Length: 461
Image (cartoon, rainbow, N blue to C red; front, side, top):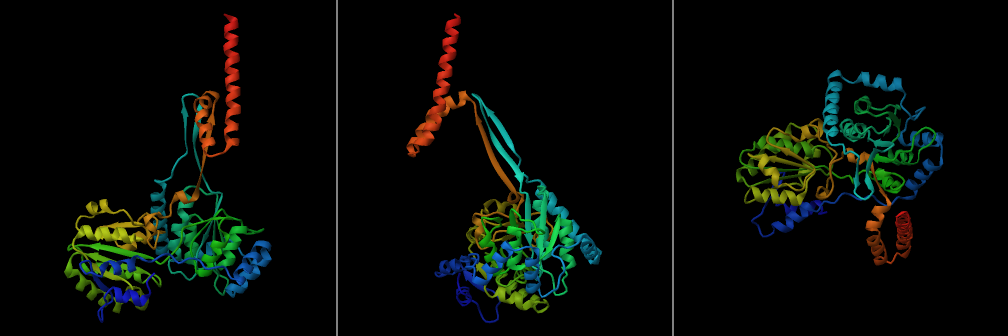
């Protein structure tokens, strides 16, 4: 990834401008754009001795050992790891009714969207006695991790949980750290309830990941862990991979907007800011062939940031972004496909036409009245999306991530007689004579039985 100073130089930032400008007609454009695209997801570091010690303590210890670790890391004197039902009920009652209704509506829309995507089991029979197919079943237990200091934790709990709930995973547990008073934010517990979480545990950091992976008398071991945290959490997840399955790599959020003359500069600036304000390292990119938008969007960014709480964080993210002035809409779409963004907004006159040429994006927002905020919260599609260019080969979180698929096959003697010789030849091609022999022994019996039947028929005649 290009350093921040390199990015500033590459984007040709002018004094006072929040976003630098690149022009595809410039000789140096290709090098500068490659620097923007070079944004791999941060890799987990090597687990240090303290982290490995924590994981081993959780793995080999009991509930009391885990409770001691959680108390030390959270600075709270909690009496129990699991959130009791009455505590959960009381927390939900503390959430403003309007906020509860909004969370409920978001959960309903996301749930309905994912219900349309559930793959089903299938089976088929072939002539000659072959029976084969595919069984699709949910995982037995899933763990969702949520950071207490993530401002978007409620919406992330909804998005991470609902696909598992839709396919009826029997048990979904949430791990999130308590505050110094031993409490979990009511908004997180409310989100957990509407999303379909069954149990909630007060634990965070590497100890939560280890507890979900290995389990103990109180915390159940899960089959998969979903949700991202800090570097220590990422490293802990990497350390337990193979014991459990994991979600895809995390990384800073990003938006790429393709705009034409029909776009409103103030709306474009607002959408760029809405991504930039979320977290350190957020990435923003505007692609347009309309020259007048460049200056107007920059002016709007300056104006809107003055009235924005937390504008400092947004400015930091904008400092590494860019506006790219292209030759035409087709070139803008081509560059967007190369960038493979988490969010792609098509702020153009004919978004339905433009989307036909889009090949790489996590979520595509069509038209002028579809802000990134709608996609993040309650449009329906999942907002847990591939970042860092991984939209070239990864997909949004969905029901498939909580299903396991098992194939099955049965050959009757006629089908093995039909295909057995080819199976033997392929095994011999690989040099696996044991494979070939396992087929040949069965073929010998099939031939022998066939000869015996033919002899019996001749004897009757």
